[in-house]
Image (cartoon, rainbow, N blue to C red; front, side, top):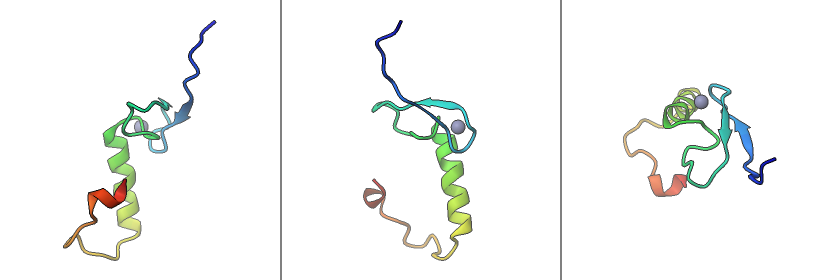
Length: 61
Ligand SMILES: [Zn+2]
């Protein structure tokens, strides 16, 4: 029996179980790599703005 109530989600990129914890900065992704892959696909699909002025990282949070 465990008292831990850590929610687990499936990584959208690779499907691996990911523990939904505050220290997991990449959730719902299992890793930075999967997050970047997902963002990369998104950027490719939504290709409309050249990476000239790039999005402000502060606005992505
Ligand atoms: Zn993953």
